[in-house]
Amino acid sequence: MDWFIAPEYWWSRLVFQRALAGLYLVAFLTAALQFRALLGERGMLPIPRFVARVSFRRAPSVFQLHYSDRFFGACSWAGCAVSAALFAGLDSHVPLWGGILLWLVPWALYLSIVNVGQTWYAFGWESLLLEVGFLAAFLGNDEVAPPIVVLFLLRWILFRVEFGAGLIKMRGDACWRKLTCLDYHHETQPMPGPLSWFFHHLPKPLHRVEVAANHFTQLVVPVLLFTPQPIATAAASLMIVTQLWLVLSGNFSWLNWITIVLAASALRLPGSAPSVPPTPLWYEVVVLAVAALLGYLSYHPVVNLVSRRQVMNRSFDPLHLVNTYGAFGSVSRFRYEVVVEGTLDDVPREDSDWREYEFKGKPGDPRHWPRQFAPYHLRLDWLMWFAGLSPAYAGEWFGGLMERLLEEDRDTLRLLRRSPFPPGEPPRYVRARLFRYRYTTWRELRETGACWERTYVREYMPPTRLARAAQRS
Image (tube, rainbow, N blue to C red; front, top):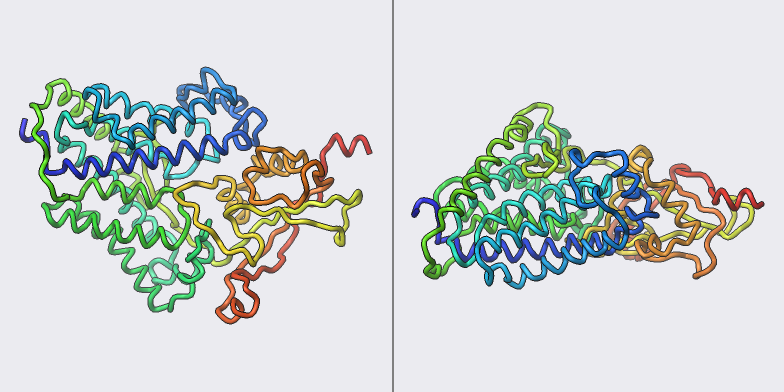
């Protein structure tokens, strides 16, 4: 049926699907390289302990049926392989039904990971990848033109991502309404990037322009996605430019990139579509049924969107099919960082030789310039930012981190940039202290070469040693 398909979006679909497969690959690679220390059998929040108390119905996952570190690793690397195959275009060389099933494989595998990932996977972009990934399975392959209803639903996701983020800002911190939030945000964001220091030092009038432009892009432009072309393409293009600006300003995992990928699906790219056979009736029925299901599940996200008590990043179904999004409803005015240290001394004193552990992404040594990691996601580093906001955010896992540093756990040390202790000589005590960080000024940067200046605030965790070592002594 002519009304069912939009052949003019043939190339937009191609770009969207290949880029989404690339993000899937990054997500599975992140899981494969980090899970043992975070979620493994000896991890800080072990999956076996989680599935023992949470039912399959609440958190559907293949790991509810069986778990071992080897099995989790196999699933993660299998996800990498399928994602790489999709990135290479394998779905275009199989029948239409095979393409749908192929796209559902990474969705099901990643759903299994997210649903047992606990606080390490409690980020909005996890649900966003699942929601977009599920819908992408029904976008078709080279045997059919893109279905209009699926393209519409992709815009519906993009609308909720941007509009929800805009509303949470206007309803949240007053600095968004006063246009002053960027006076602080680049300095206090979870994981600064290599250009964040320079963004912070832009003139304050330009920060006001940035905030105003952000409000326009998130509260006005999303409505234009549902207007005729070329207005919809212009709206999507403006969103892409805004997201690329955010990519330059910090490390936000794949949040910005998946938003760009979503916006690409709304672009009307030049080029003619190849001729294809008539759309199969079974495919039309499946797509319309999926659309009806997602429309039904949109009720709670819409209610949340219009509510004065709007919440950010919430899933309303265990399959993460339709979710609510939002970011930075409030902005911290000061940056606090937890600095972890260890010593080889038998008796820990203030003047002991305390050596600092360095993380890959979070600020530590004031002389170390932030690096670019996104779209790769450093999960421990992100949670360390939350730990600096309040010990309540770290209650489940921080003690486990300290214990594994005392044990010289190989998988945990791989998550760090550097351990200050040589192999085979783990610290006898570790401690954590809270510091306030601020960006240096231009003058301080020239004089010291440091991009950060930090001030001691208080003790975060007193010197601690392994219980069995304490018993032997």
